[in-house]
View: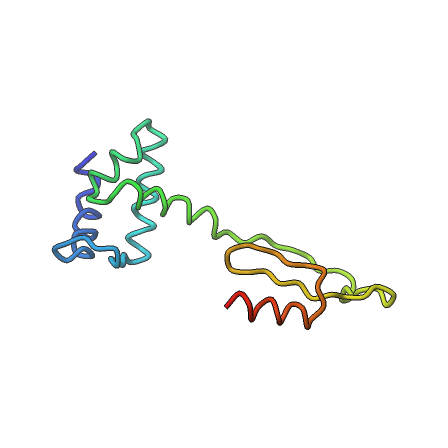
Length: 120
C-alpha cells in the first residue's frame, strides 16, 4: 500500500512544511486524491486509520475529509408558488433565539428589549 501512495505522501509532507499545526492547509487536489485513495482502500477492507497513517495524516483528518465531500453535494430543487405571507388576522410576535440555543416567544417587543438589557 505504501508504494501506491508515495507521490501523495510527498505532497502531504510539503503541505506540512516540517510540522503539524491546527492551521495546516491542504490543497483541494491533495484532499480529493487522499479521499479517493482512502475509499478505494476501504473497499478492499483496509481501515481508514491505516490509510491515514501511511499518508502521514491524522485518521480524524482523513475521516473529516471523507465526510465533508459527501455533505457538499447540492440537490436540484423546484420553487413553485408565490411568497408565503402570514394571515392578516394573525398577529406576529417577535421571537428571540440566543447563540446558546434558548428560544423566547410570547413577549411583546418592549419586554424582549428589557430582557436583553437584563441579560447583558
